[in-house]
Image (cartoon, rainbow, N blue to C red; front, top):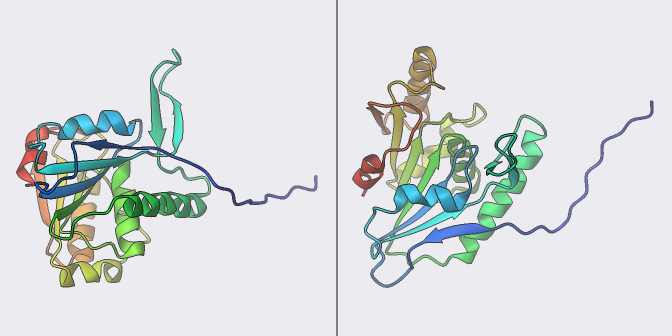
Length: 214
């Protein structure tokens, strides 16, 4: 069998969702990256208790949509899989670049990037590869890709970026051993400057923790 695999470049369109309005009263601009199985418009519900006049939230949409169960009603999405990860990562980062360029943020706003679950891998890759300057980087219940190095994040120290990680103490996707390994990795990658928060709960977003970030 004479098999070959080829690539082709083309233009595509993807949506993103926003919550509240960007005005002169806005203090915090967020880019929030959802986990596997979410749609961006539903992910925004976790941020709806933030003061609306002060917080403008942007939720990019993972491109790979699929039905969540055999009823073929509920739709979720995934950022990446193990198939063609390197190429798909570049596609996702190009999409995030476009979302970022489409939103002209006032420089005086507090810029927060938050990744949840699978969104952590996207947030860290985007920040590291594009050297995105943000005031806060929040990594919530997800793993940091192994290819990323401490030198990829060294610019955050110069930018005085606050790095926060949040993990539930009974998260069903994170064993005790993995939690310890990830904790050491976080210390190494962010030179011991990241605040690591372990809360009571599983693999879930708690609105009170979101509120505490600002």
